[in-house]
Length: 343
Ligand SMILES: [Mn+2]
Image (cartoon, rainbow, N blue to C red; front, side):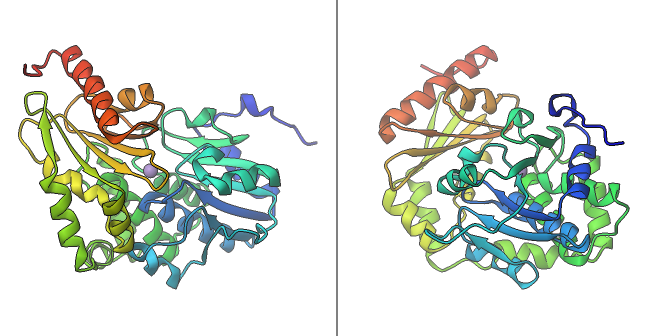
């Protein structure tokens, strides 16, 4: 007797529906958002090795190739990215990690939409249970998507292999900022302990991720910081990377999020924004909150999303207008929180 549970009734807060999906299928393709970050890639590594160990066929296809920062993952995990004209690997199930909508995959999302795979979502972003997945495992409280993949290993009673442990650790350190952000809870630290016991060398991982920068990264950071500005009584700080600097950063594989750190370190600061001008002229906005301001709410008003303390949006405005629009939203949020915003 096979009982089919309607998807709408499946509880996305437990791993059960995803585990049933894994049991029922043989071939999987894993993907994630454009410009995949450490959480997205780490979660893919951990899920790749889980599925591979279960004897499934599995491939990772991302919108973008592995950048130099993450190239060390290729020593144990095969990554690929969309090449125009090349066919996608045939798979029964597409698993989206660290995002929930095909639209987050750019052109690759359109290709997957045409391929009509069954879609599963594993994610920790607000609202992802309403994404494109017909099956989802979503936990907003999870520190990283990688920790949700770790839950799958645990639920199946399997001990993490060293590559999978490295993947989960990468996810965890990426999304907790090496255990500095407010999502660093007992669960995150306990998991980190288990991963070190499973063979992860945390110091070596730090060096691989953050101590292999190219010489030009120093000047890119300096240029971005010289242009940084403080507004709203010192509670809002922002920096901009114009098209040329974005390109230079891409060439040097420079993690532009680093630009926000010195602003975030300021005593009075509440919200930090980074504006990056893309090749098509659109502005990629990143927002970070230090205290209680909900930057997800601000990003959502601008058509974006994310988390309470880290969110983003894409703005189709000239950069000066984008800054004005964001400053206005931040002003409103600060005022609603009863904070001074200066003259
Ligand atoms: Mn994440």
